[in-house]
Length: 228
Image (cartoon, rainbow, N blue to C red; front, side):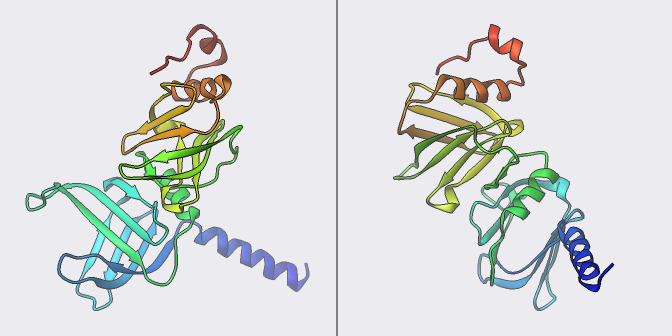
């Protein structure tokens, strides 16, 4: 084996071992003063240590209630712990990345590691079989993008990355369409309503409905998807 091949093999092994470990210089959001530190996320959980060494935080993966990675420069974690002094109840941690952005590798890792939905976007092995231009309604305003319905997931790819989402069917609670120009997808943590720029094909809605309700082909023939 040549030296070049050996070096390449070593590089691939190093990448594989590092695939489940993520390290970021961050700023931890605090009430009175932001705090610089180092954040690590791995199979062992989330670990944070402040730059001055005075603060150390450890959260096992099983204690994470919600992970929000929708902003590529922010990691927002909500835990199961309820605090009496917080109006919202739960203990939350917000980390702003100092010199970089996290990418879909971290989102994929947490999607695989956590049983609850992760807020964020990533590609899937089977991309959208059906694609349609759409407008996502916000409380104030909205954003344009493309809705994809595939065999693995429903995706919304927005011109504003923070609004892009990937919803695995295992995490989807309900879908609906009041008209052929409307589509709704809901999970435990959020609901997206879309104005579609073309008619939603019946076979596209049927594909999503089949996967959300875990139906086989024969079941679908006998159970027509309802309309909101």
